[in-house]
Image (cartoon, rainbow, N blue to C red):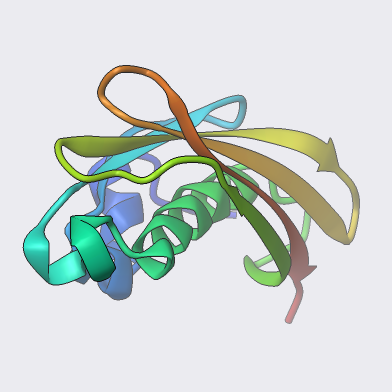
Amino acid sequence: MTSPSAPAELLAAMPFAAGLGIELHEATAERCAGSLAWSPGACTVGGALHGGALMALADSVGAVCAYLNLPEGATGTSTVESKTNFLRAVTAGRVHATARPLHIGGTLLVVQTDLRDDAERLVGQTTQTQIALRR
């Protein structure tokens, strides 16, 4: 499979993520890392970063991790299940996402993404199942 490998190329394949301001800093099969800046336009009540923005960050970085672990013959990936636990509000700075594979199978891939604030406190954790797409 011919695939983009540089973080900028991988992010360019996800226009929604790029439009939200998500940045991808590292992309390997073992670890993917990205971040999202707090902004007033992405907040909910009280100036807290909206849960949907946090989930989009986790889903995007996790999807790159799954993509980089696709089994032979797969052409892409799609999220089939995602669960996020929100642990604290983010009211300033950046949220940093780190995704690692938990299970790489022939059809299903499971990825866990930790979300941390600038003080490295865990603000959320997402576990997602991705399906390997075949044409």
